[in-house]
Image (cartoon, rainbow, N blue to C red; front, top):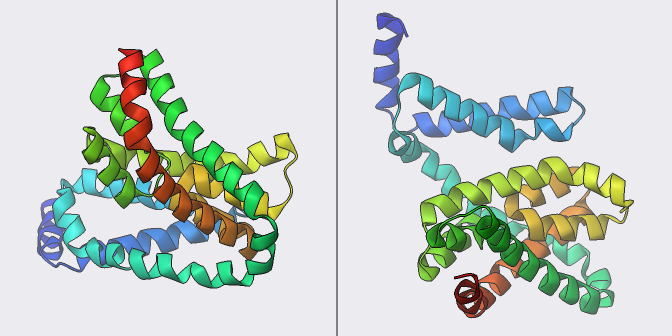
Length: 243
């Protein structure tokens, strides 16, 4: 940057609201690009916004903690936003009751396979034990995944990165996968996306329609709970077997 622009940036970076402003502007710009591209999966707003922010922080030499001091206000709103997902879910209550058993079986299969397949693939490529333990909860929403990784002996920071990558890849790739597999039911599409890609996948499901979003929100919540309960029991014998 030129000296003048650098001086302006140093002044602005001292404001705790800079991170919040940058986050909102980046996401709004990403949404506009996504709309211009007719919501093409590769223009996922989360993917574009994260890319913009990473490039900006890298170009300006801004520490992540400096950015997060302002962006934490958005982080705080994740809680109320998650609770608000119960509203569209309640509207789907009659169908949820009819599909309770199939959904429970799908949740169990999806939760276990998402964790164990990641560990087995990681082991195939020679990942360390700490990396394998960090990989296991990659399909769970970030706060829960980081807590699980820490309890198991993994690396919470690595888990956070893997969770974000998993969510973005799921949101980008799922629409094409549904076409190949000929899955058209919004409930099935949303539920699968919620298990595999947590919050980012749920946001993508809501772009399709409210029903897909509601089932994705249900899957995201229960997958977090089930993974937190099952992994401490399933991973130790698996790690001994791999050793």
